[in-house]
Length: 383
Ligand SMILES: *Cc1c(COP(=O)(O)O)cnc(C)c1O
Image (tube, rainbow, N blue to C red; front, side, top):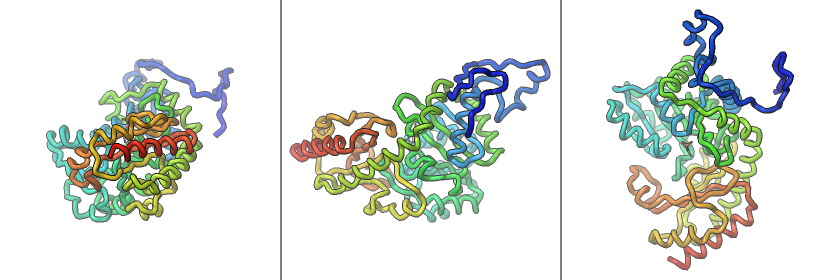
């Protein structure tokens, strides 16, 4: 798209201007009184976003192939605000057990105590979802592949059934992102990205986005975002918009490296399982191959048991390159640990072992592999 200088503006910059402001001023009394009619796209107060946010929303909507987008201050906020916009007491809500942790906790500790019938379903239920739908089922929450455990979900099967039964669907599409999965085309009503990950891409901000087609839903979502005060910083919108300029290049390169690292890990004797849908060995590989166009940079591994927590300490502390930390998708590789207790406390976990989760960045692949090899050696010695 060609960027043109606005008429009368001599500063024809290629960069997104950062508009700050809580207050929008009005030309006259009538405009002020009718200000609410400017929503969901226009400007009446800073909370619904400045032109910097609106510009970013247009770019994200275009990437997703959606008509509308609302940015939120974090991925978690995008998930929870979307549920709050459409689900009320008396409704039934289906959440995949592989969904993001704070969405599940929100369901359990808040919604369930506000009269919502919250039900966690097995991530690989696929067309079996039909049997769980009740007359009051309002929304199905999905994530593919699932957080940490990486189960694939048959998005086509679930959205087809949901549409027939008049149930809304929300999908957290952060792993594949629109580059590798156009969730809107697969019938998802609300596509969520943790823009904190690839869109931002540099581990220096938090943001979320919700993209959708239905204009009435858009109005409801914008109102909810505003009522809940979920305002997104214009500086962060600027940074994400800048991140989008390199997002596809970064992700293609990180994806290629992650697949090579996954294939290498699969060959290691001390690695019992690599949870990564792009590998032929993954139970969800067929769904991934049929519905997705590529793979993200995040993978999980299960190491040979039995091991105490201290043995994992030997693995992590031997790493010289990988920083230990939460989040993922940035230019730096990262590694994190999810204890066995977290798996055994789940209703439908594919394992009772601890999981090591690895995000692959833009560093030299040989360096990353030699670092992981050293950590595996240390693990082997400590076993
Ligand atoms: C990180 C993440 C989120 C939450 O995003 P934040 O911006 O950290 O709140 C949601 N879903 C997935 C899959 C994530 O990885």
